[in-house]
Image (cartoon, one colour):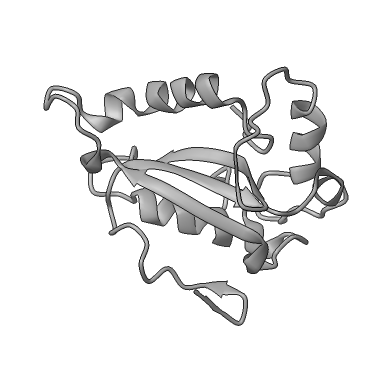
Length: 156
């Protein structure tokens, strides 16, 4: 839901949960290349990412309707009790100093109706109890990218 182009996440994941998320857009590569990034420290420069990543073999080509997947990430891996999946998704839209976020809302590509998000909670995935999220989260994210391709706005 949007209110004056501000993301209001009423039905998203609960706070301080662990999981993985995906961000989609209908902006084209040309629009990404001609964009102006958010000026907050650590914000991702869309144009720079497209220039660097379009050379990669195996770019992600997943899409839903007319929205292509451009970013994947993990949430809830910080120190115990700090942040979570919901908080990380909101940070991708609102930005955060030095966080390495997309900071969509303060970029030139801030029309929120042109962006979509999906997510999965680690607690919804059936794994043996010995597998905790934090130690395996980066590996799960990497395996997903190996299988589906590298999202064009991902940095590492």
